[in-house]
Length: 382
Image 1: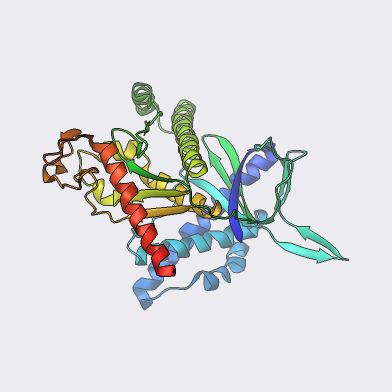
Image 2 (image 1 turned 90 degrees about the vertical axis):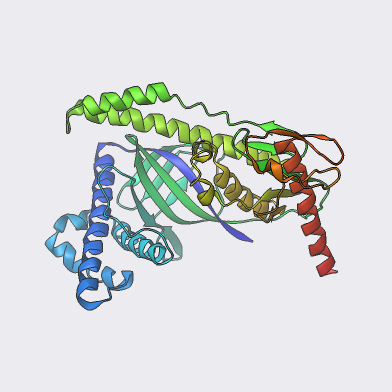
């Protein structure tokens, strides 16, 4: 089985390479905005607009007018058009209308690995040398990198690379197609997990995992106040923006590390993982739980669990979102509808008089419901 896997490295470009990266990001943004404007105008007149393929044919003539477009990687300009087409597809599927890109927001560009052969030798436009800590990129040539110090080589075919500028630093994300050998599936353990707000995860083994990310709100508020006092366009304002961006970057990186630690532990120790199919978007409309949901990355945990379960040949079962896991007693199956109130954290079963912790009881019920779904699937196969 072949999978696509991304590897992120820190880039250390010299001054010329840094200028070229910034120029390429600017050109990719210009192409996106130029053809978005073209699409909008064309749609108003004709009721339809050109595809990304037809728009790409116009780039050579446009680069004659704007000669600075010739200085950058041509793949980055075409990929910008593909991003625009993807934005319109998302709009047709219910997302918001594509917006013009602003300078200083999500600064990145994508380039492809172009393969060619000459005199029996194969050449790639993107090369990764982990021994010497160098990556070769189109137009930039060799750039120093840092990351994955425990690896000497990454086996697979390089498909593309995304060069990103974030908080005054440069990164490259390399997409590699790898061969995945799945282990055999031998079900010997099952776990139910209740994803919540008070505790990030409560398992059917009564293990509680808390959100360990501490957001320094006082420091953040102070920095944002400092930014508002700085003069627009000044060097001090730029420095303050970098400080805020780096603080947010630190929080994001800590959150990613926490999520991967949790998901790796769950996948390693269990063969069948059962969770609820939560509608997080609808839950965020409830202002009582919205703040907790924003701090607890529930949907991201489920997303990562899905692909890690496939890679490790484990089962991830999601039960129906309307299953009343918190209301049912896991001992006698009595349903207590009073427990719908989220403020009730502990309750006693009126039928068997068992005391229940709301989240632990829900995780046990989720496990049993997932086991039923798994057994039904085996019966259908037999």
